[in-house]
Image 1 (cartoon, helix red, strand yellow):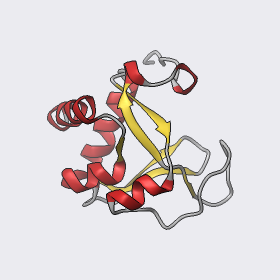
Image 2: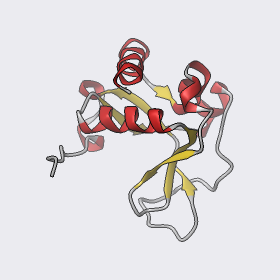
Image 3: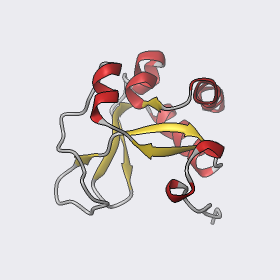
Image 4: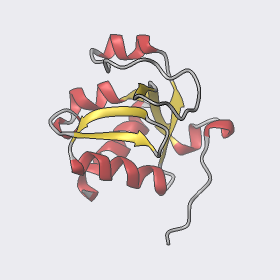
Length: 123
């Protein structure tokens, strides 16, 4: 898992504003799985079709504040060649049915403060 996390972190650092569609084009772990990356109990899906390794890699990069997510246009995903077939999330939830929140991933230092999440201490 650490190897994939390192590769993804390096790619995001070098490229910036990386969509999950772009990650799925570059890394098979982001397209060949059966898991979703979902925001807690909100029913907001960030991406699906990920392997356990991809979910763990992205999660560790968020927790360690290596990367952050910024809301994105659906057009970014159209250009990158992949979209989820879910209604677009218009608010922070929770929703009764799954909704998609398109985001791009950025190095944490480049994430605007209003989109930064507070660090959560491990239990």
